[in-house]
Length: 176
Image (cartoon, rainbow, N blue to C red; front, side, top):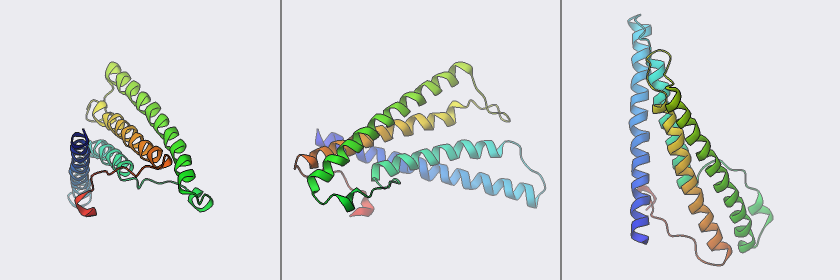
């Protein structure tokens, strides 16, 4: 079971990183193309901003999921300064993590409803008439990934609150 989880963890990391790299390359290419066409050749191409925005959705949302996986997302935590007992601190972190999991699941549910509405309404982008769910799907994928990662973080904090060691999650190659 542990091996299967480790394989899933590594696969998700690689998939997220690939999506971030590819979307970044596409986004930079689109922006540079539009700048060159508009300011050098004086021939702006309609719809490039739309494609860049849709690509940016995937880049930003996968970055958010990746930040959740790596636990380097933005947080304001002063509790570690106030609570010196490690198990008490872990118990408080467990509660905070549980609240985060619940909120991430609510957000995932909202994203699901949004995608369902978008599919039903056949919402299209204004210039290129691309179905909007291509970009909006990034919200659902990211929210589901964040809910999963926050759940793993919750389990980790709960284990520590009960005096067990932290989860041994697979490290990224650059962490070793």
